[in-house]
Length: 112
Image (cartoon, rainbow, N blue to C red; front, top):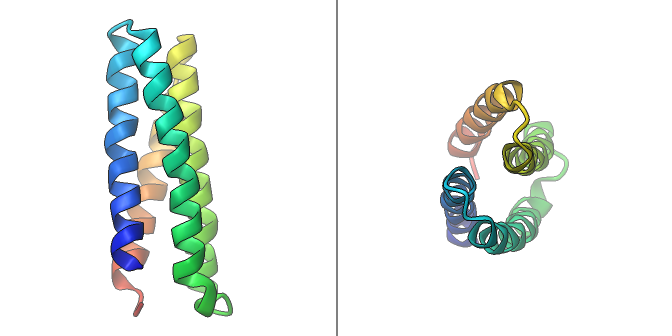
């Protein structure tokens, strides 16, 4: 199950970058299609993460990782939407990078 979870979030990060590139290039239709696929991967990330962490739900660090994972997904969506609308995203980028770095640290340092 760990491989499925890591694969889904790795693909989601790649799709996120593709959505931003297509949006910046003015290819709205391609960006919209890729964005919908990215949203499917958000669901897959949550499902595989819940399956992976369900047995560890009593450990506070795993709960923090799950909550921050949802926050990172929300930040990715906010960055994509605000980029599409032409609004500033600097604060969201900073929060995204900090939260993602902390989640990766937790994910690779916790025993499971």
